[in-house]
Each structure stands twice: as C-alpha cells, then as structure tokens.
Image (cartoon, rainbow over all chains, first blue to last red):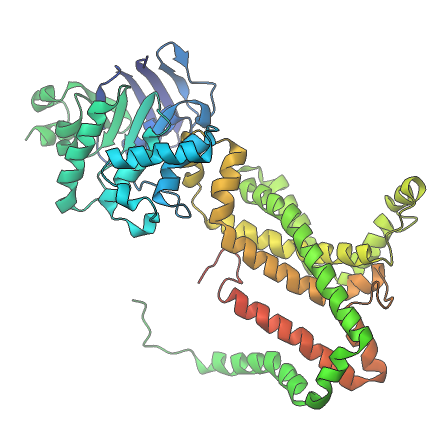
Length: 232
Length: 268
C-alpha cells in the first residue's frame, strides 16, 4: 500500500536558504515550479537522501531520515537521465532489479516487459548513445520504475528535449504518471509541464514557497513578480 | 574556435626544438648503432631469453598487484577531496613519494623493511623461514613499489573526471556502494585503469635501481632485462644495444596502445 510523502526541508548554505514543506498523496503529482536556482532540484536531492538537511522525510509511517539513498525506495529521474553509458538500454532498466538481487534472467524479463509497455522494446540492445532524447527519457523512467519505488521524483524530465518531441513525450509521461500508484514530485520551470502533468503545485523562489495550491489557482496568484508573470 | 592566427614566439620555438632533439636524438643514436644483423642471435641467447621471460613475468604480476591494490587506493585518493586539507595533502604526498624518490633509495628502504633483519622481514624469517631479498618475489615487490603511483594517479584522474551522479543514480536504484563500485564506477573508469596498468607494466619492465638493490642480479631468478642490459654493456656493448632496442620496442608498443590516454584523466 503506497503511503503519502511528507517532507519538511530546511537547508542553510552561504548565500542560500531553503525552507519547504510538502505533502503528496499516493497517486498525486505535485509540481515544484520556479525559476533557476530556486532550490527545486536541491529539494529532490534532499528527499532522495543525497544531501543532508534539517527536517524530515516520511513515506506513510516510515521515516526515511536515517536511511541511505539505496534503501529509501525513492526513484529519481535526472534532468539529463544519466543512463549508464556502458550498459545497453535493457541492462540499464534491469540494473535496479539486479541490484536488489533478482537473477539475471528475471531482471532481463522485467526490463523487457517495461520496455514493451513504454513502446521502446526495439531499443533493448542499443547503447544510451544510440537513442534519441525522447527515447532516453522513456528509458530513464522505465529504469526508475523497474524497482517499484514508493515515491517517484522527476527532475525537469522534459527540459533536455527539443520542442518538436516535447509534446509527445509529455503526453506519454502523463499516461505513465497516471499509472504510478505512489506520490510523484515533478520539478520543472515550465508552466506547460505543470498544467499537463500535475494536480498540485508549489512555487519556489529563492528557497521559499511563494505559492501552494492547485494548478488552476495559480492563475489568480500575484504575490510576486514571478507569479504575476506566470498568470499572464 | 580558438584564435589561431598568431604563431608561437621564436624565442620559444628554438628552445622547444632543442628540447625535443634532446629527447629524440639519444634514441636515434641507439637505433643507428644497433647491430641489426645480430639482434636475433643476441635475443635468442639462453641467458637473455631467461632475463626477458623473468622481466615479462615479474612485470605482469607486479601490474596485477598494482591494479588490485592501486584501484582501491585511487578511489580513496579521489574521494579525499572531501577531507580536511592536512590528511588530504599527506595522503597524496605519500602516494607520490616513490615517483620522485631515486629507485635505489626505494630498494634500500625495502631491504630495511623486508630484508632478513628488516623491521618486518625478521619476523617473516623467524616465523615462516621466508627471506624475500634476492628472490623473484623481491623483484616483484621492487616493481610494485616504483610502479603503483603511476596506476593510482591515472585511475584517480579518471575517477575525478567521471560524473559522480552516476553513482547517485545507481544508489536510487537500490545499488549498495560495493555493487555501484563494481557495476558503475569501475566500468566508467575502465580506460583509466587500462592506461594506468600499461604505464605500470612499462615502469615495472624498466625497473633497475630498486631491483638491483633489493633483489640483486642472479641470473634466472632476479636478473631482469634492464639489469642484464647494464651488465652486458661492460663486456658486450652490441648485446646491450640489442637489449635496449627490445626495451625501446616494448615502450613504443605501449605508447601506441595508450594513444592519447597517457595523461591521467585525459582520453582522446
């Protein structure tokens, strides 16, 4: 049974303060929207366990604070996907199950099933350098989902793509997110991504929350110049 | 595009040319004076063949040891960037010392540690009746001592140049640190490890000072190719030249094998 993601993150670095609290119900997608340097990706890194911070991260009644990255059950799709360049597409997707001790044949089979579901079965034997950006994005998502994470984090999943393919990949991603039973946090600086993919939104500016609510409510938000620019 | 219009100042070109000549001309002399007609006979001599095989064998084992110990050491060194300044600099200095130390000093140091009356050697002898000096094992230890820094620095350079976020990606997929190291980190720095191992092998093959000090020059057991070359020079210069050519050929072959990868962390 997937649980709700609750996180309170406070971080103080020279010249940068981050203070954000978020709660995402299972099956919901929360967008973290904001300009560059607002602390969006840092928030994801904190949830994933890559950065130390003050506060807490919980999934359901399970605290993740003391857990190392590999035991958090948090799937992370990076902005540049970070597919392992020395492995084939299928091996990339099978990597997580293999790391969890699943034997080679079963992990390969699970990868093949996922690639099929993502419509990229024909790429199985290719290297990451031999697939397009849109394909790499699907592979990265399949790889993250292969270990059935409790929480899914997406860091600018469409930013690396050309405008022509972005629409298609976005529609695709929307379908896959709808299938994911756990909470999802999506970092983006694109309002179009938020509208297409998320139900709730938090706007982060300079490490502070300036808007929290529904995507529709964003239209009326005008507390900061950034928010006014969004609602135009 | 970088600006390429302006050439290099003549004041630099002339010393550069002299420098290059100084590096190349001795090797040209070696090739010009080579007894081409008798090289095969010289190399086929039993004692030379023996030295050649001993050198190849010991250098291979030394390289293997350097990889097994040096890759983990390189990993620690690469990650030491997060340490306080003092231990970080100390670690790097300790690893670099054998690079700048005269090899003969390394040989003396090895004797004092592992010789029959050495700090550790006395116990090896008393408890296990093992005496390392003047054995093929001593040849290998001398080679490891002088060659390991090459491997460590090459692999460390590759590790520093590699994107550590791949390790984070592996961790988010549930991979333990050991699994990540074996399946992600190591394959990603594979070219650096190969380059380091090749440098290590060449350095081991050419080892002379530490070897002759710690292992001596007993034909068949510790008389490696460089030692044989030096000894031959006293009474059969042609043989010494022939052996030098063999060592030069190996060095050139390694250089070709490395292509542009011989600088730590740089791949071409």
